[in-house]
Length: 272
View 1 (cartoon, one colour):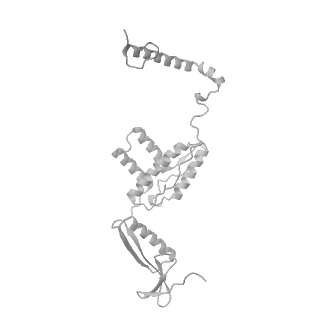
View 2: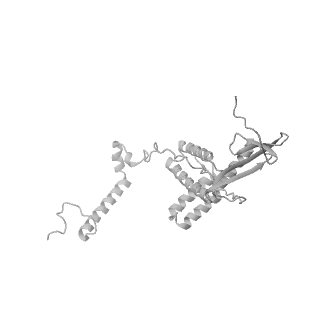
View 3: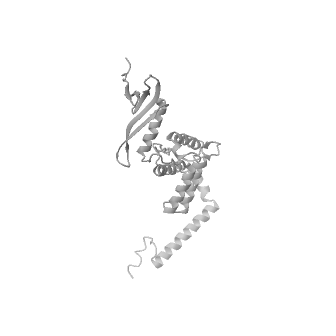
């Protein structure tokens, strides 16, 4: 046998019975004609700390449409948004610009280096970023905040990962973008009461195989390369200047006591 067959019961000149979705009831006329659905359930309202009833007759709605309406209404109540309140639609670019300015004003971003870093990253997040390989990661500038989902963020991460694989950018750089992206979306959720956090669960880019020092760095010279490197005029001049500076500093510290002494001279000014 199939599932339990619910009996019809009369309510307000119509007949209703539970649908497969909790809180939604099928509705039909006395003549047996389908008359949409009735939504009736309770959701806790955080502004009063008590359950609030949701009750709505949707005479033309299918089960799918009634389910969608219930999800939206329940989310509104859980966020504490008053019924009939205007829904603010803010684009990502607008909010990013506002948050940047706000953080500068309140002192969260103090240095010029911090301001430059944020401005640089926001440009990538808003307009997108392209690499020399020809690959590109999308931007979120024109998207509404409440339309950005985790799927969008994961898609963006895949595109950035392709840029990393192509050698256009390094994982630490991409993680810097992702870090500011997380800050933006957390602030957007608080300010605009977004139902979800799009960056939640999105992991960082793997840096385990990232090489900090390249083979061109001096500390990676082969033994046979050390001699020619040290005979380079620019290198010998730099070493000579460094030795001269160190010697002058040592002499000055011995005379004035303003700097560290070199051991082996019997302890300096101890005995006369």
